[in-house]
Structures are given as C-alpha cells and as structure tokens.
Image 1 (tube, one colour):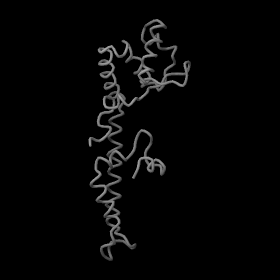
Image 2 (image 1 turned 180 degrees about the vertical axis):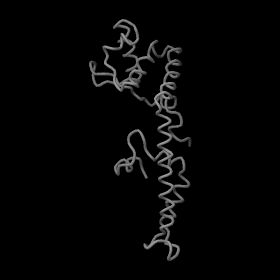
Image 3 (image 1 turned 135 degrees about the vertical axis):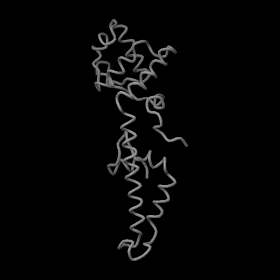
Image 4 (image 1 turned 45 degrees about the horizontal axis):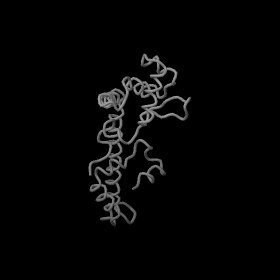
Length: 174
C-alpha cells in the first residue's frame, strides 16, 4: 500500500504514516495480506468466501503497527528530546563554521513557538540587527528556517540533510 494511497483514504499525514511500520515488517505484512485472500478454512471461519480469521490477523497486525508508529513518532517529536538533537547538530555545524554562532537560539525559538517574528531575533540572540540578519540568512540558506517572504515570520525548516540527525531511525535501514 503506497503512502499516497494511505493519505488519500485518511490514514497518516505528511509527517506520520503507517507505511514506515509496514516497511519495517514487510515480510510479515505481505504474508498476512496474502493469507487474508485465502478461501475460508471451514464453516467456523466467517460467512463469506474468504477466511475471516486471516482477515482478523491482518487487521490486528495493521492496528498494532499503527500503535507502534504513533509511539515512535511521539518519542521522536518529544520537544525536549528533539531540541537536544537539534542543539547537538547546530553545535557541530557552528564548530565547523558552516553555521554562525547563536544559530541554535533562533532555531529553538522557532521550534518552541511555531513561528518567530524577524524583529525579535536581535534581542533573542543579543546582537545587532545586521548580525541577526546574517544569522537568519544563513539558517534560511541551509533551509533550517523557512519563510513566505522577506518580511514574513520564520518557521522551522526540515531539510533532508538533517533528517538522520534530528529524526534518527525515521527511515528503515534496508
């Protein structure tokens, strides 16, 4: 079942999908899916042409996988834990001079507030407006911040190159 199909029928979101869990257990998922298509085994195995017991097993597996993925996403998106992973990433990037100093304070505020007015940044990081603009520009260039325009509020960005650091184990290892 594709992620797009699941989204079309209202299962998952752009951030969460049961597809990750199904991919992690694809062998079991395929086995149960095929078993749900076998003819009923006896008179006690449902009323239709196919096995009700096998369908129940598939449904149970699917719902357990959904619960597992909800638990995983809850842990992954815990604000304090996510903030710590982001801080470690930014510290490494600042040490390598790929991000300007004080970048984490801006990203943390965007994470915790949802959006950040540009005019608050100089006070937030205790610098001049020029330095604040340089920090904002660097974070936007790295797609760590996003904004609709040069005057619009700043939001946290999630570029693909930070996924492994900010969201470990998001994609199953193949």
